[in-house]
Image (cartoon, rainbow, N blue to C red):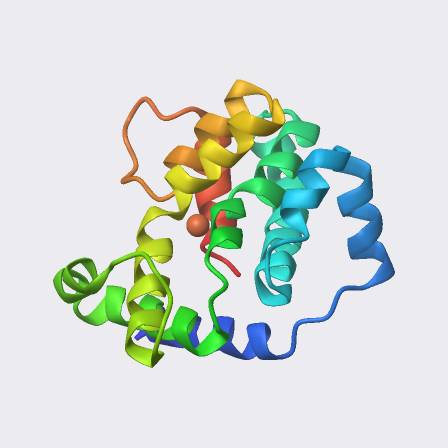
Length: 177
Ligand SMILES: [Fe+2]
Ligand SMILES: [Fe+2]
């Protein structure tokens, strides 16, 4: 029930997303020009999600004993792979819901390439499932530091005992918004 409530909260946040001047200042402070170009390809709800995750990562960096600058950048960039999707909010929400209720079906349907309503949904499912790897590939092209590429690539993988604290914090903050 908590997961469903969280999904609903995320959907409402996505529909009401707005960038404040404070949000924009945070993006300008931590991202390079090339990283910002990639970031601005994300839809507004995803950009807002990343900014909220960055705020939480900055807040909790002392607790996890990690570098705040690195965590802010990781949070802003972790979903950058979704920028290659051109997905609607409805497709994004449906894919997230299907992943929760029937993950095998989502994996079966996922296929890249936009077209009619059904193909667009299949494309959204593909991006949803593969955005960590797609994002890591995009970041390699921008010369982003290796740790950030690794955090992006691994942020949806199941937790392991020897995960670095940076990855633990990113996953925790990511799950909150
Ligand atoms: Fe993600
Ligand atoms: Fe995320």
